[in-house]
Length: 499
Image (spheres, rainbow, N blue to C red):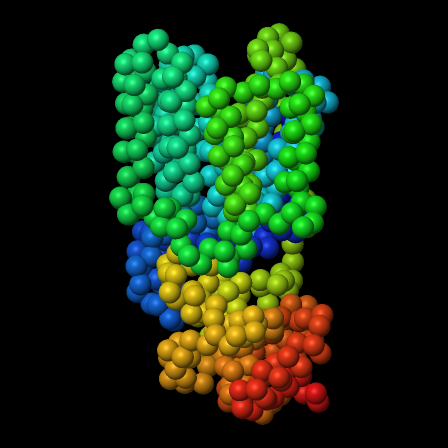
């Protein structure tokens, strides 16, 4: 019953949590999937932006994007929620069912709850969640192979082909396989046989990763992303913030308490793997999801030692999960989320922009890029930072942030490049407004502002628009922008008429 409740909890999390569809990348993933379905292939160059059209693009998540777009075409956003709820539910089912071999009763339910809390921030409508059952299934294959003191069957290496076309996390799968192979080699009296069987499996898995539209370049690409210099400027790649209570802090405290109070013990190699996952989660917030998916599978045996006999395990709950899933799916379809304004999706603001303006270049906030692509507007930048590259993204950050740190950091080459562009719309969050760039573009107001919950649109005689994030400190923001403009000898136009 605990297994079923945890699986249902994961599905409910996806369906009811506002964050599920709040990631700006979801929009461009669906747009990329639509292109893939229309053209019957994965894109190999940029098809969306106006700044780097035709630049090489390794769309390594193309299969997930095609699935997302196919479901979206048939069932809209409700269908996507059901798809991702199914992926999360299957993953939690596998994790907690594995843990039920070692933990029973309320402790198992708590174990599942902590697993969901740890992975929760990463439960977003993006390709990594679609690939989560593959990650969990892969680790279970490795664990069961070790329990049987053999290498996994060679055919299971084919999972890597599917995984490599869905998400770049398959590289972690190879690393984990190497870890379990090392554990088998260190603990075996016949190390030559272990090296032969596990080596053959590792070779098969490595070769399986090459069967993507990008071949060896697709294998190298995840390493290229992780080595980018601009990653600290992207929220999900920043370290975990412990200045306020987070789900990861709660999970770590609970796990430490349980481990010390129950005398949990892990084999040294698995302990090293767990610590490596913890390091990744602390260094990059996005990897908290991976810790939540793999960590429980490694930890569960540490609390019991020997598996609980099958006769004592209670596997009920299939009827419960079937009924609960039906209710959740019906609720999602009958009461779908409405298209409301959100920080990453200024729907009402963009609707007020004419089709003629939509066809012009846009200088947009990073988080608006995905929604602009989804709506057929070519952005200046979007969440594909790996395609734009370090140099381009760094110039964009300098351009947007201006002198927020005290020193004016303007990139004249990029600014000059923008000055050569004919009158164009400007999509911009107020927090990042660079007065040195914005002031010359903000001519006399040609119409009153139209405001919504996420953005403000102002039409100007120059043919430009501003999509401004509505700030709670609007007066302070406006005064700061005025000081920037006056210091640089630039004309200043208040963002709101009458100021």
